[in-house]
Image (cartoon, rainbow, N blue to C red; front, side, top):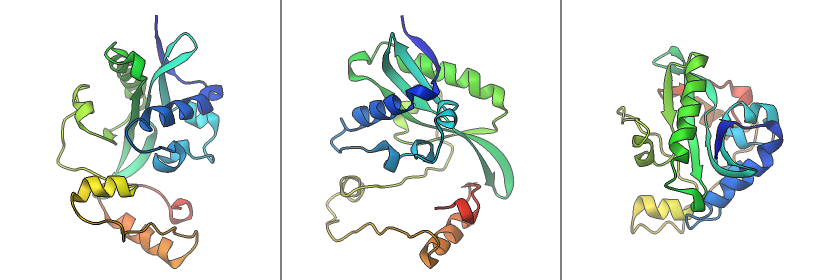
Length: 195
């Protein structure tokens, strides 16, 4: 019988490997440390990671996961606590067994006790409707690769598009931070920690 719970710090690497395995099955090799939230960054401790990552375990096997870090944000200059739901994944052999529904229930029960004001979603929103989420008039989309650009722009030739690394402390980083601060909603992040 499966167990649904917060992850343990020592499971961090296995969970990241699990996420890479699942998401790489969607035609594009995936490196979760690069493509996903700061939660997967090496600067985040295993303890911080485990406080925001929920797993479905079948014995010693990870069969599902969802991440839900709580972040400070503002909407029209009003501070809000946001539960940022993302990285839903179920092992291909364990789909249609109810694992995601159970892990989402576990996550909601835990996060609801932490005084959050709103849940924000990442990823493909269709799957979240299965868990009671509805569109709220805004959608944030980030494209990471030539593959996703081709999917977004259809027949547009994206071969000339390039990704440019923004160097820490550069003028370009400062301009990006200024643009970031103008949008609403915005996740609160000071300029020092913007990179």
